[in-house]
Image: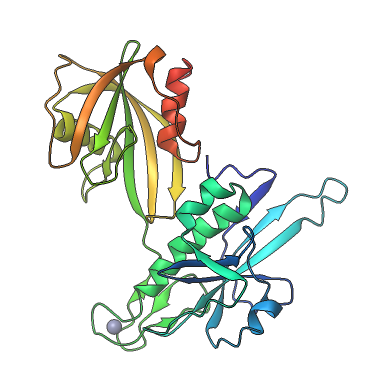
Amino acid sequence: MIQDIAPWHLRNEFMNVAPRPGDLVLDMDREGVLSAGDGLRFPTVETWRTFGDDAALHYAFQIVRKDESCPEQPVEERFFLALRETGRQAPTPEGWRRAMPSTLRGESPGPLAYAAATGWHLFCWYDSTRCCGRCGEKLLFSETERAMICPRCGAVYYPRIAPCVIVAVTCGDRLLLTRYARPGAKNLVLVAGFVEAGETAEEAVHREVMEETGLKVKNLRYFGSQPWGFSGTLALGYVAELDGPDDIRLDTSELAEALWVDRSRIPPCPDSASLTMEMITRFSRGEL
Ligand SMILES: [Zn+2]
């Protein structure tokens, strides 16, 4: 999955530090992240400064790899976000390009693609968290934690993460697969939906399966979780058994189709980046 970048590890503890030579810049705007024209490579701080941009660099996270020959001194790559005032256009220098982070996971999976996904989550939050929602004052960067603070009313804003559930509904050797009704949705996926205020993740599983397909489920098993920075979500994966009749009542506002597919007939997944695809693949192998 996208977060499986061993032997690298993403460390996101907040640090109030200035960039130093060799650190990498995640220069993002709504068109995507700035990357080398011939592959996935982010500019170093010193290269980025030659572009003549006056965006502010804010520490984001680091990706660390244990060096087997010298475990006390891990190899680390530090990433900084280039953040601009509202409405400021981000330049794309010659020889560089802008790519949506969601496309990079297929182009070049690994620690840099995961850094782009996580950077995108943070960028989108910073970009939409500029003014206080309570009093309208311009927010300031906290110097002690990853937060924005209001100097007038004291409100504190933390990065927004939306939990959602992904459910593999099984009935013996059959798995429930669905396809979204929205234009362009071509892959068969699992039932999924956001956790609502006031409910547990398990209650969200029961509700989403019922809403989308009219089916009841039982014997929930937690599979695992996945940060999905492209949409600012944290996916929680569950396996659930059908409880009762298998007749599907489709919610056509959300889904184009929902069908029971035998283990041996599950189509190959287009990639292994997402929790959904991981769970489908595991089921097809008899491992779920
Ligand atoms: Zn305020």
